[in-house]
Image 1 (tube, rainbow, N blue to C red):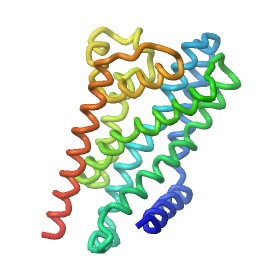
Image 2: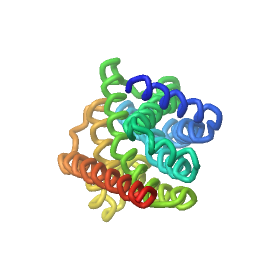
Image 3: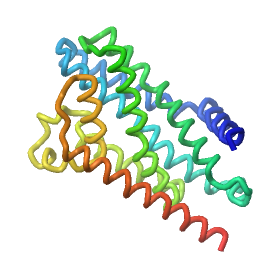
Image 4: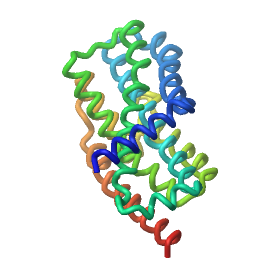
Length: 246
């Protein structure tokens, strides 16, 4: 089983390298945003710069875990090779594990430009343990968004998955406080913000790297979202399998 997981992970990583558009988007857009908005306006404030760094790192991670996963899995479903793979006795675990591991690997690479901008152009500070713990939270925080991406992929066609993932991605990023500091969000957005999953991950990142006190409601909401999305992704996979092989 482990050999199959490694083989699927390697295959998916090679696909990413052959068509690196998704990787470039998740790596360059947050870094450019850092240079354009954080460096001139909050670069000299250690706490604000550190919080912004965590937010934009997760913004890039969301691109991989939600948008890229939903699109690539939906596209795979439309290939003749995919139904054949589903008939093999190994089951879905190697493919899903390979998808998760390859997504996490790409996520680690995508956050490097943001970290470099923060290190050389801002006053953001973090110790090595904070950085490593923050990276662990970042990777764990992508799980509910991968589940969301899988759900979208199994209930929509590839062309629809592009639109649906984008429609969900940007509002969650904005409302969750990834692009604007939570304290300057409009009143009605601030009320909704603790209930979107992006805010829960951001709260954990800010607490670890910038020493803020996390919003308990946001953390509970994140846990609930993760459970619901896991159930939804499993249901969507079984529904899709039933429609294809019944």
